[in-house]
Length: 452
Image (tube, rainbow, N blue to C red; front, side):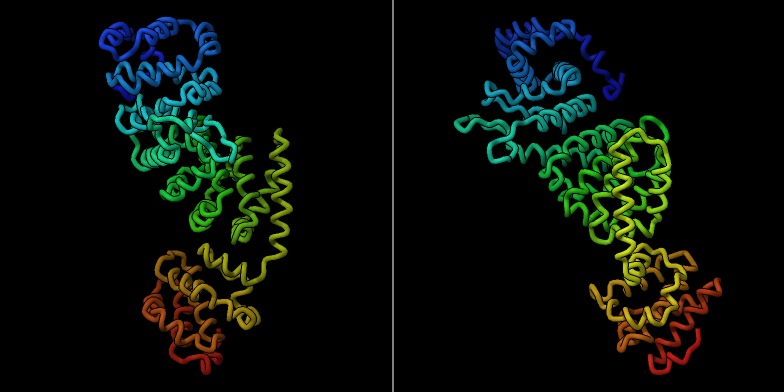
């Protein structure tokens, strides 16, 4: 049987030669007694042992993983720990008991992430994520790894643990060790770990946010719905962290989340996406993008459905109010800017409104003529005839209304791009490309005589 397909139940059916390990001094006599008492016992009996003397059993497990490298034994102990934590996740606190102050609770799991087969990697990841999340808080509010101040033994620094864990999780999202389980395992662990600000910082630093974006898409099967939910949960947690928000703003995150919320009937998915919208609404250009993507109407549709979750209903109401306020605040240039940045150019009234160009022409100078540069990029990259036509028209308007419009547009190497479009198969594109070229050659003084 492939190692990747091993199950915990199969592994726990093995007979491990604990006596041999004691004879070779890999475990102590006390360790052997504890293992005999615990191994192959009913869950209720084990639960009582852990209640009575949990740290002693944890120490034995950690010692075995540190000192014994036989794959079957490592898998067995990881299965024991996984079973113990699955029955009661709060048992992860046992790894931080004061009596274990000189034992490193992290090192073995961190090592096994990179060196074991998939069964070992998956168990190590899940266990390590739980142990890390259960570490105690110190008085200054920072999270500690439980190291005693007078400890002489070298305990893996918590920063190194988190860094190693985040790197492994990102590696799984880039190139999976297992064809079907790597990504769900990694996302599930991230959904737990990203609750911590330090993990959010590490995740953004290793460029992890972009690895989440492709996973935000409508889901139908139970497995894919759970993955979508946990991915959305990760994005929601990142929406509390400013550097992550900056990345989300420049990616396709928002349109993807809108697609999800439009098509999902799973309450927990809709709730976490709506809460993410609520967090992002007041940040940068998100509010304007939400309006542009039709979110006000989508929220209306969602409110009309019969949800049982009161938090979701409250969040929908708050989001609706926030969107209404946003629409009131949006100036005509803000709306125009969003239209250009999203590449959704259409003949909305402002394009052909002379007052719009007169009043807003200096706004085009912001961020080193960012909007102008995006319009020129659209000429190169868009396949939409309407977007190409509007972009040509808007460039012609800039040339006409800005005192240095002709020089600025020429300096940005626009002429060659527009010239190509004069041979476009679409009449609307060729007409506006011609208008742009005429204004580029004639300049503002004569261009104003040209009729649109």
